[in-house]
Amino acid sequence: MKNSIIFLFLLANSLVAQAQTLTWAQLWQAAQQNRASLQAGKADLTAAQWAEKTAQSAYLPQISLAYDYRYNPLIQAQAVPVGQFAPIPTDETRIIRFGTNWQQSAGVSFYQPLIDLDLRSRLAQSRLQQQQSRLRFEEAEGLLAEELLLTALRVGSAQQSLQAALSDTQQTFNSWQLAQERVKAGRLSAQAYEQQQIAHLQSLRNWRNSAALLLREQIYLSFLSGLPLDRVLADDSYLADLPVLLQEKPAAIQPDFNRLRLQSETRARELDVQRLKQARLPRLGIDAFLGANQFTNTLQPTAAGTWFGASYVGLSLRMPLLQASNGSAAQRNLISQSQAAVYREKEDEARQLRDVAHAELELNQQKDLLAYETQLLQLQRQAYQRAQEQFDAGRSSAETLRQAKESLVQQETATRRQELLLFEARVKLLQAQGLLLPRVKGGKG
Image (cartoon, rainbow, N blue to C red; front, side, top):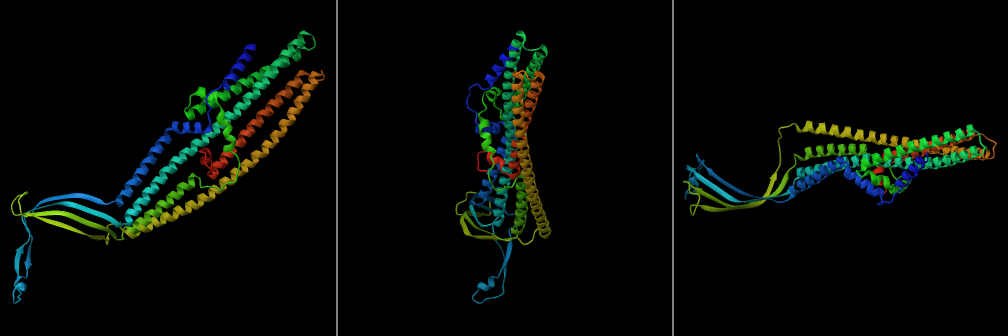
């Protein structure tokens, strides 16, 4: 039995061993780096950011080097009214071929978009895709934050249970040792001595169960964060930050991830409708060319005197008139989808308000239950203190004292369980309000 107590103190000392301080910020950062899905989401977000830069580059000047070498097997002929150039104009015409058998051209072409609403729509869609990638990344962060926070709360609750079990085991051990001395002195019956031994064994069993529960939660916390188990066991400084994360303070409800997804879907349908409308609008830009052309009747790529400079600069206007697809039907289809997305967003807004109301009701209920449990705990402590005094005075049996102690331990366990339920209710409320992730990341919720 003494070996068990020695092992108890050794484990207690190991749980509070000195190590590098592990703050909540460090724990959260380690968990982010450890979760592969977050790393994948971060890579998707980076890709979306580069896609937006690619879409923005469509507004940059487009400069290209152009070269063509053509052979014309048939040279186009044209009827020229040569009689109009005579001193006395006549209606005489003559068929004249324009061009040569061989022709090549080389130069630099330049185009600068000025007004192109289709490019603007593509850029808006690219930005929306980046927002959607960020939303998916933050949603994965939110799930991890909730899981990590609840695990840390369970670790804190398990530590309280272990400390209470340790204190109880020390007390029952002292009582058991005192009972041994009383039995030897003939001042305590064998039955009372057995009751003290039973009480100590029960407290020792509760301690071992509490230690195993704490170790399971710490192992899972090590799994979530990717930190070595010995560091998680050695330092619990992050628990000091939890009350700040979960403190109640007034804040406006923010759209949760479901609403944000529906808002993104609504925006995507609006952009589709806008792009379809803008596909029929004119596109204006500056078009320019600087180079030279060669005309020969034989294959002479480098013949002198056959090259002639060529250049132009001006405005280029393009306006689509007819399209292969039924634009009107497609536009009406997208408008209907956009209206449906708006209705779904409104419905989900009502759903979030309902979830927040339910979470607030659950939180208030857990507060009331904790108040009852706290009152019961105070009464059980008073009852145990009276039982201890009566036992010491010889007016009560050891069985009565053991039962009072067992009731007190059960009530302490129930109170700690209720405290954990209250903390979990606060986490669910913050998640429903869309404020959990900013709190966890150190923002202002």
